[in-house]
Amino acid sequence: MSQRNQTLGEFIIENQSSFKYTSGELSRLINSIRLAAKVVNHEVNKAGLVDIIGTAGDTNIQGEDQQKLDVYANDTFIKTMTKRNIVCGIASEEEDDFVAINSQDENHQNKYVVLIDPLDGSSNIDVNVSVGTIFSIYRRVTPVGTPVTIKDFLQKGNQQVAAGYVVYGTSTMLVYTTGHGVNGFTLNPAIGTFYLSHPNMQFPENGSIYSVNEGNYIHFPKGIKDYIKYCQMEEGDRPYTSRYIGSLVSDFHRNMIKGGIYMYPKSSMNAKGKLRLLYECNPMAFLAEQANGKASDGFTRIMDIEPTELHERVPFICGSKNMVEKAEEFMQNA
Ligand code: P6P
Image (tube, rainbow, N blue to C red):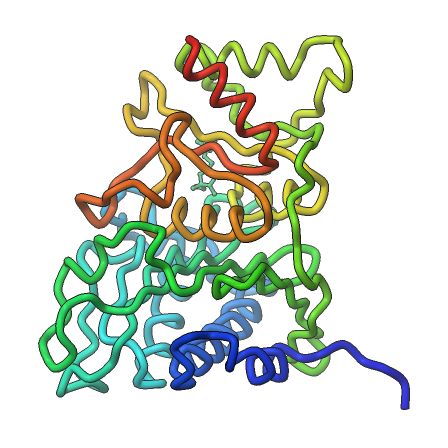
């Protein structure tokens, strides 16, 4: 019989015992994310065909126009995870406050909380550029049997039990970690099954791609400006190539495969940067470190930052270890 790649379902079962909380709940949670990803993928792939593009007429807490697909993705992930009766609470970029899951957990017995950016890069939807979902999973820290509280969500990134993303691109992939490396699964749309296509993903220690919105150059801190000029200098393996998709998941995914660095620094326009710590930077930082990469704000390891509020933003530098360390050197010597 011809060999075939392992499916995501088979991978989850095979690796369940390696996860210290082997009650199977995390496996069921990852499976619920798998289902929601397929449902959202179906809508994203036909966005141009139905009247689902454009704003839903609302704005989210970030003050950004909510694209209809944002709302659809948010509802899909929340409903799918709720129905599996595994999580006690969900925080989302699209929700002002966290959502306590009481309907399926009236005795507050569920142990996991999920933080999610249901459709990152959604401003790209109308121009047919790839977008993504980012998720971060923790065990609750308040007592089981009591209602979930904000403390369960404001945990440092180094407490994550799992994190990952779905990239809705030329193909749809689910990439995740439970702290034992990073593995990528590609969806076969003909049969609706994710297959292990990228086992043990690793950032090359060096790379020649830098990803930053250079339109904001004049607003960047001196250290970031100095590092960008370093990337552009003719010397050794430089000048590097600039690639910026405007979708964190896509820039991160390309850099993980080819080697590179992604930066969203603070600026005179965004005093703390643009990206959110809890459901963008922490999950991507967990993946980066599990793939031999690095993630910081230029000075502090992202996963060591103590969160103070649900939608807080931090400056974000992430990717190939040697490139991140060089950028940190410029930031710290500026
Ligand atoms: P800018 C998308 O809105 C996002 O959060 C990331 O996915 C992306 O990398 C960044 O913002 C793009 O922001 O300001 O460069 O358009």
